[in-house]
Image (cartoon, rainbow, N blue to C red; front, top):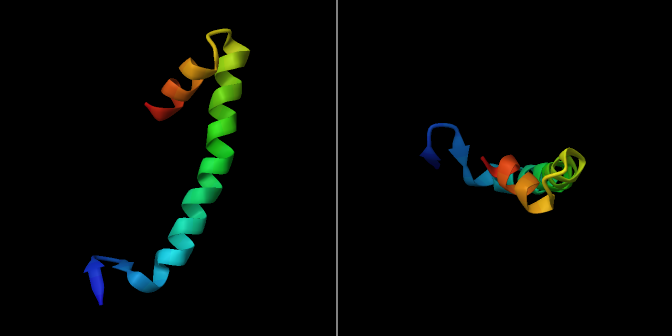
Length: 50
């Protein structure tokens, strides 16, 4: 049963693991870029979000 084109419930586990993996990599990188540029961790998170 497809919810939307190409989206199936049997792919949900892989989608969740993929999202968690991306978050584990992206969040520290955004914080580090903010700190390295001198604007602070919060600005790095905001910039990574945008």
